[in-house]
Length: 475
Image (cartoon, rainbow, N blue to C red; front, side, top):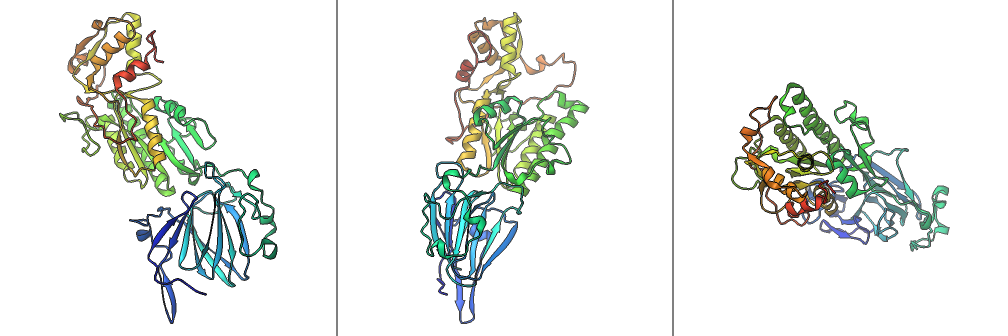
């Protein structure tokens, strides 16, 4: 057997997205040879940049005879295949849903070559030398309950040019009877779970992502994130992303004994459970943060690099959630302010008061910008689809910062009412006669917006205009 010695560790792209050929350094002398078959630190860094796919099982396939042919099988996990002895011809066909469905790639593999096969790409191997063995690492345990996809080795559309004709080789009866490409059911993507599906952001996420078999929208009735049995509530390896839109947001009630317990349970305990599950299963965790993680004392807009300094219980729980999620290998934290969507919110309240003839007092010493849930949802989708690295993203409306008093006057004017009916008062005066506990509010809630094209921004006052109908009800 001839082995290519002296290669540098490098990768080669293929026509199939995510299918990567790896050239391995093999060191040999009169005694034999040695290679590092999988070396996580080297292979997932720098110019090599293989996915850090977290293998959990190592399998070996040994084949006695030349021409032994297996496949074409697409499994619901990632796979790293390398040859230990001998030589194989490999054929891969993209069987995932999408534009690359049906794309074919073939090459030979020997001990100096490996290949990373992403989930849903069909793989097949034909031995070219006797006593050939190849090993493969996978990042999930085999289970009869998961979805597999298969393609016939002789499919005319794929038209794979096998070195040894299929009529002359050893093939299992099962592999001979796999469907042609026209009859293949594509492998769906890993699932997306959206929690808090009935909230303002949850409804916007449903509108943004749509209804598909691989997207699950869950309410608390469907999935209790504080349950001690959460780890067993789903087959979590089937999920690629969790978007946690569930949260406790009653900032004043959080200052009460019962509210404090509920806030910590929803915003910290539940988040910690999701973080544990995401870390164990290679899931990307999307977390929604808040301007309340800051004390509002900064004179400028808050950046993604600013240290948190929450004032009240709600802000403290959100900051704790941020810290937990930041430790998840694959995560995105979206920090928002003054959220407006389909549900009870400040804009709806002001529109209703205007219609009822009520002249409200509104605080005029808190500064920020509205953030519309449609923009948050669109940003989350853009960031996820881009494959952007983990991190914190500020998401808010653009434009000149204003006060709640300014927004209230805008709502009155846009719904055909006299804006002078709104009176501005300080936060201290507004809450002076409050019957219960009042949470401290950040006086500055302005978030700094970067030039990142992935963050969907628009002037928040223009978005307010489009949010309101002529009659004063949100569109």
